[in-house]
Length: 112
Image (tube, rainbow, N blue to C red; front, side):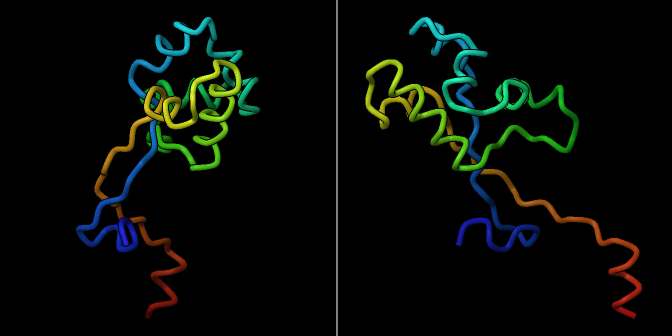
């Protein structure tokens, strides 16, 4: 039920890169570009996940579960650590308040 009623006081979980993500993968001799390539995600996507503040309000730093699992699986395959350990090393889950979407003019007119 988490996140189902966003905008009504509920919170949702957002999966984000660990704040020390780049340092943690570097300890295994993996760079950001290589990690993106191994996980089959766009390099710009990985950099946006690492620095969401540079990508405007649209991007808040969270990722889809599919992207998270791609990173976990790729890191695990490359380093030999378990997927559980990879998850703990690379990702965090943050509870954030839901935010309401603004109604469009069209939606306002149809309600009249």
